[in-house]
Length: 158
Image 1 (cartoon, one colour):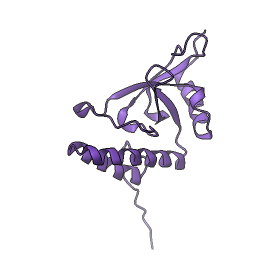
Image 2 (cartoon, rainbow, N blue to C red):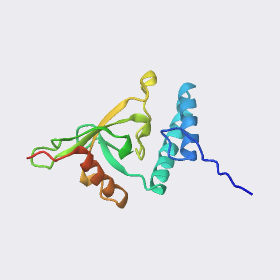
Image 3 (cartoon, rainbow, N blue to C red):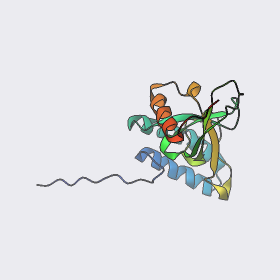
Image 4 (cartoon, helix red, strand yellow):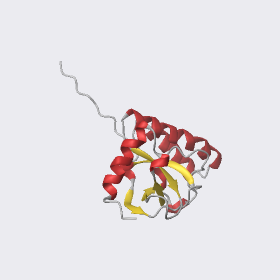
């Protein structure tokens, strides 16, 4: 008797079946222009992505979406970040440089009360942000910051 396992197949953006199902609901509510249901599904989608990232031990970092310390905070898998580079710290010259990166809006998670993207036909669009050690002090994010620093290359001289 032979057992042949079936691999679960889900979209390339998703990390789990739960996330994939919620992503499908989110996309359907977006197409149907059902803002109320869309806003209900959005936080559940982020929670499912966070759980899957932690279960799979995927590297993710917390990023500031924007150019200042008061910007909205979200999480993103290191593998989803593009155009990674060191930049001067938005808080000023006396602070160490931070890492700038871009990510598609539909793969961000742990976004608190931030509402989903409303860009319509431009969805998903690229969101720029930066990561630093202050926002990445947990066991899940410290290793990810180390990998992000490696991908960013040598840190510029002050």
